[in-house]
Length: 191
Length: 149
Image 1 (tube, each protein chain N blue to C red):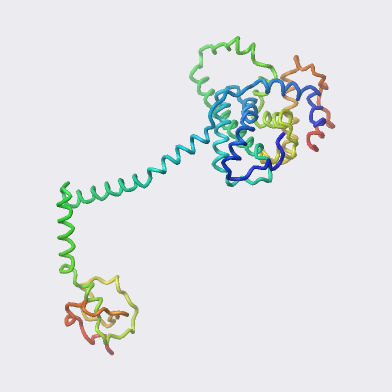
Image 2 (cartoon, chains in turn purple, yellow):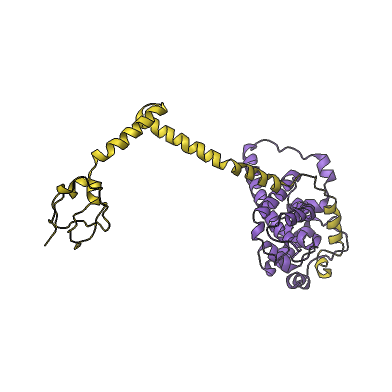
């Protein structure tokens, strides 16, 4: 997990190159957990670094630089998902009356269930889960990174957990408790 | 972090890490670097583009004004216009040389009045703070003392 400050200097080209080298794979994975299309994930991650680079001189080192790039990348992924949803609606309208094309069996077989379930979540919920459980940010850091309150992050994590549990119910055998309790929800909210 | 793994089970973070670590982004050059280079290259030619645009605009204007695409004609037209300008509008020069005894009892409207009006008698003569000697070819045309009270 990156430390706050990261010793990055705003506006420094060398430091931004270093930020790209260390953060790009992690940012890409965050976006890949939201988007199922690997090319779209790459586009969003790259666009996030382009936007971050343009604003690099204005970045304030009071928050982790990688979290800041994550915020841009998550917003980019949300915009992509929104436009993709509109595109799919258009396709459905064009395809009305015809049978839907079957899913690629190879694709279905090789795709891990957890990622599939994660990508089926609303992007904000998926981002909260990945930032928390994969990148190890705490609620305060996620809230700062995504520009929302800590309570909102707690709620998102709770909702994401419930949805993931429902989606992964048959294969969710990693010692998970059967359901959320109010105490467990509080652990998200208070942490 | 131990608290965070409880709701989804102790192995959730591990499983998530395994699956996300399996995703390896293919190497691609940073897009921000190429974007910046492209922008710099674009601005490098900005002055040249500006000069070409201004020259084109001037040429177009001159062509429309003279009806000719020959730059010699444009030059002649400009010279003719410059030479004919003083004779066509003597009033501004008259304005630069007001009578020395003109009163300054009214507001100054130096540039708003047309030249023809300035030669007419007026109760409000327009004074000049710093008259330049020698630039008034026809001082006798001015209504001397008309503004005196």
